[in-house]
Amino acid sequence: MQEFLTNNTVNWNLMSLTGYRTLVILSALIESPKTNEEINEYLLNNQYIKEKFSNDTIRLYINSLREVGCKIVGANKSDDKKYKLISHPFDYDIPKSQLKAMAKLYKSISDKIDVKEIIEIETFLKKLSNIVKNEGTKETLKSISILKSININILKDLIVHCKNKNQIIFLYNSPKSGKKEIEIIADKLTFESNKIYLWGTNLTHREYSYFVVDRILKICSIKFLKIEEDFLPTTITYEIYNPDYTPEADEMITEKKPDKLIIQVTSKNEFSLIQRVLHMADQCRVTQPEEFKTKLVKKLRAMEKNYEKA
Image (cartoon, rainbow, N blue to C red; front, side):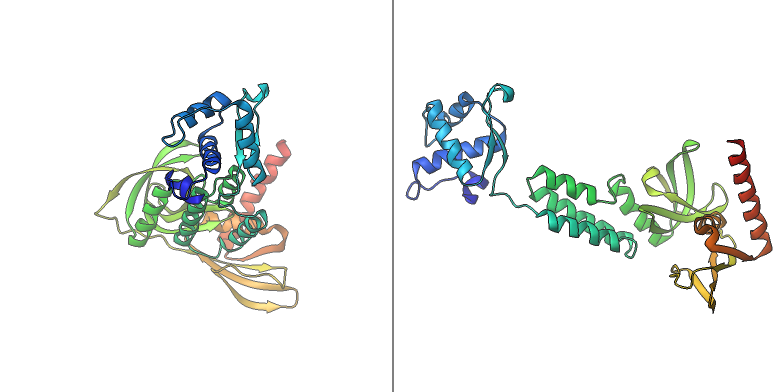
């Protein structure tokens, strides 16, 4: 059965004509839905059959396929009088319980592995999708993907540019200002909050910045004579009012108290530090430096004014 569906070859010494006709009809329906007339044309053109059959006989072959597990609908007016193969038991498929487990596992490890490993998992998922025929399974595998909105070729190129610390210019589709070119010395790729970010020394805005990779439309050019420029990092200290808090990789616990943790973190991107503190809301309070505290308070007051206007 599997050999025939793969290459449509048959051995006369082993062939049952009734069984063979049934397989030919299955092969025809795998190609596309067909009417009785179209099935007969398919049988007539087969080098071993070369004849047509009555509608009742074709119905018997169809019912034989149903008995072995094929799900076939039609032929009636609502289906344009065509038999349609929904599924058959000769396909490789993945049980729903396994798909659910795969999705849960992938989600749990995605922020703990590097981007290169994410691409390897995505490649594996794509291979699985090419093997299975069930459209529902294909859609589920597609939904598991965390790179469905990202150009994989661009992502692979960015991995190389980050490894070599290349100075590149890329076209970026900013949600606020639209399409524009950004020049950056690529540093690293990270996966956070279901997004992949490119980090590096932003020569366009003269700061260490990050960009959402799925908004990078193309890499325009690579500069081989790199500008040697770096920006001083910012180090802040804050209190976390949750003794069970699990620190991020770049956070260092400097002191533990019964009701709070004292944490220090350093980053070249001040904006990302502000975002981090705002995300923790009233569970966090910055203690130093004063300059950063002033900027944070200014940001909070601006936000408050926006809400007052509303």
